[in-house]
Image 1 (spheres, rainbow, N blue to C red):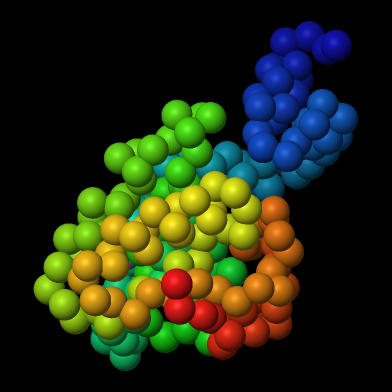
Image 2: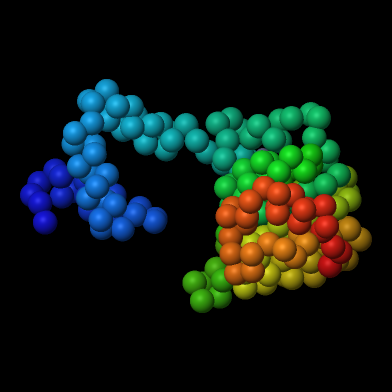
Length: 197
Ligand SMILES: [Zn+2]
């Protein structure tokens, strides 16, 4: 244990996801010995992300304007929506280059143990986007784990009366895993081989 500012920094870093006590200590000492301009840039990047980044009012991806880059792109198809849990999943799917439609970011998955139900996700917003009938296919690209499957099943039943073509990514994705950890070839294949639900 250290005193004062260095311990405060270790404590703050240790609260970040994926940063254990040893990493927190290593990063803190790296910051201590780093060039002051580099540290200033890091501090500014942390502040700017909170000031500038917001969520797209249409799809809830991260954005720096009212609409995100993908929603603003007129070349993308309005007839296919890909439903994902988090903005990082949008990045993972974009990397495959397989998808040219629009996204809808739910903001998580149904997880009764953590008290997350359909009302806590952007499902109502999805339903209002689908209401005008432009979208013909809904790809459910939630994570291949229990919560992701439960969310996909829930959505499939919910939109069934709308007569949409509802698909789920093909198997081959690591079961129990997280979409963002799938390599782009596997994820690309899962896209091509998506099946109706
Ligand atoms: Zn958007």
